[in-house]
Image (cartoon, rainbow, N blue to C red; front, side, top):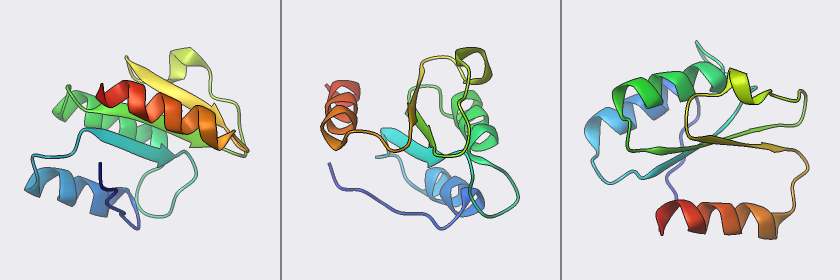
Length: 92
């Protein structure tokens, strides 16, 4: 698994449109650009349903009902071993 980084949600969407090897999107709720991470996650779920979603935030607690279906949420600071375990389980 090799990470690919996007500066903002718009760049992430361009990457998703041009690649077919992305299996997980990890996004922060608070990010620069035209949309926040929750909106990005909703778009990803709608356009690329098989992609797994992980949403993180250090500023707010996101309720399960606010997340797209089959998403995971981590509040910052999160334990690196728990995040790594979650990511590994999503690609297994």
